[in-house]
Length: 267
Image 1 (cartoon, helix red, strand yellow):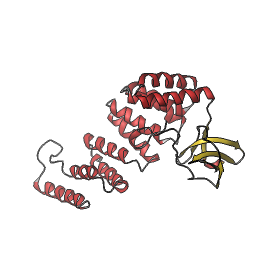
Image 2 (tube, one colour):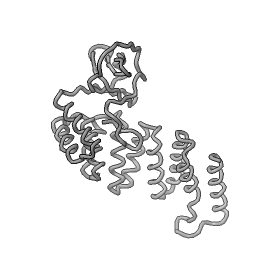
Image 3 (cartoon, helix red, strand yellow):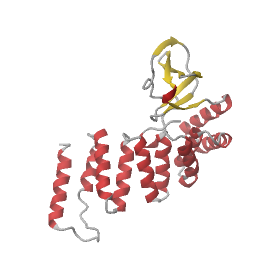
Image 4 (cartoon, one colour):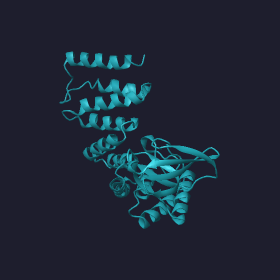
């Protein structure tokens, strides 16, 4: 069960395909089994591994009614995940339970798989994600820490770990976790916004400038987002100095000019 922006789940069968394939060709065939191939650039491909020896990993993925074979150079592959039928069935049932809102049943299934496969980073990540959904961040942290360790190229595990730390009120650790996640996934708009909010709230000597850079990076990915525009403008208008007094008039005017410039980009 993969995650998209903000850590929300997308279908396990959905994948970004063809990014590193040497070539692909089409065969008429039914749907592929849900093996997973993790590439060193953080991409996760889902399909059926049909060859896993030598310099090439061959993965069959479904496109419409066709089955596309991708040849992935071994040097680009970080990890190949191939589950047995029993674990695959348990994960499919857990996904269905999540879709139906049966969170406790999903946690039961995911917990069993994670215990039986302690070295499977994806199983640990999926359990951690479900625990976050259940508003149990303290319990979620251990499997998410394990996932980040076992899957060093997996952005999703790090995004969810940062969320868990933030929800536990461990702000400094959460700041570092968001930074780490965003180094791997620099196009994650919600991640930049969360990091900016934490930095602005912390208010350290360099935090506001880093927060400004975070929102600028987010704006590159979502230039037409009005909420992001307002966040950037608000960051320029704190209104108070570090001691809680009104900032000097010249500084307020300078901040107002910066905020107006930000807003002007969207007019």
